[in-house]
Image (cartoon, rainbow, N blue to C red):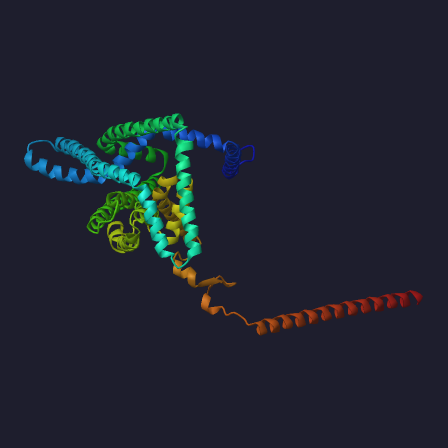
Length: 467
């Protein structure tokens, strides 16, 4: 039924959708011209919220530890305080669990720093003091390797000599005269480092409040969702958030545990075989191992250079060790810890790392996989619903065997379609041409008959007039 102006509800709805679409197009067009300013604004916003973001990340990573401790303290306090109310016991267990979780996090960070900083300092001092020896080692190794190729040996020696001369000139002519500028940059770096430390401390405090208030925040979020959407849509949204949480939690926590294990294994074995810079190399390999797919390569390159300049003979041993370690990680440790937390194939993992790294750098390489896994799952659900509405099978194997549909809408299997040979194709084309030529002849014949009949009719009319 329409109103007195002749509009019905469907017309009004279509008009509103069209107007909204036009507004979105106009806004999108305006934003394209100011995309640089928009990204700059987002960068300032992220920088201003750095402490909050760090706190959210810390709380997200520590939440499984906190839940484990809370369950343990609940059992303990129920036995110890039988007369206390359940609400009071729950609050006590929660506060105790959060306290121990934060203390565990701080102790872990302090222990890592106490172990790593002295080792890293000694490794850097050793590398600086022995830099000349390292160049001589590389030159002697190259000479022994290329002794049967005098021209190539001479070229290598010349390039090494030029490199050492260039490095000396860089120190004497660039670094020393511009020491004021260098000090300024170092000072800004120190200020940036202090800001990172400050943001981390504030982030830890913020993480404490998040862990203590997570049930309240979740309840408020549910109120917003069910206030804005219908019950069924609200259920689907909550299910989606739960899936995102499981993907991110499983991937990040699993990757961190996996990288710590790899770093510890690397430290133990490299110290046993007396590999130079064992601790520094273990830190590099452990940190870069967080990045899927490219992490082992990224960590092995600088580590291999350190080993090569210190002891070229152990370089081959190091490369073999890294290959074996990464195979063990990829086939045993990684699947055992991570399982199939993302559900992505190797192609999409590679795609998400490349795109995430190009857009957001190192954090993008780490978070690109779980983010794309969530997008991929959402796309899979939408695709499944669209296929189900058309009465089609959602199985990928079904579409691998499907070649198309016939005129009656029945599926055609790929095995039912045969490729014609060149001879068969020529026959088909010749037959088609013959049929077409015959049809043209029939058409021309019909035209001649009609023309003859028309002439006969004219002659008859003329004869009738004469009579």
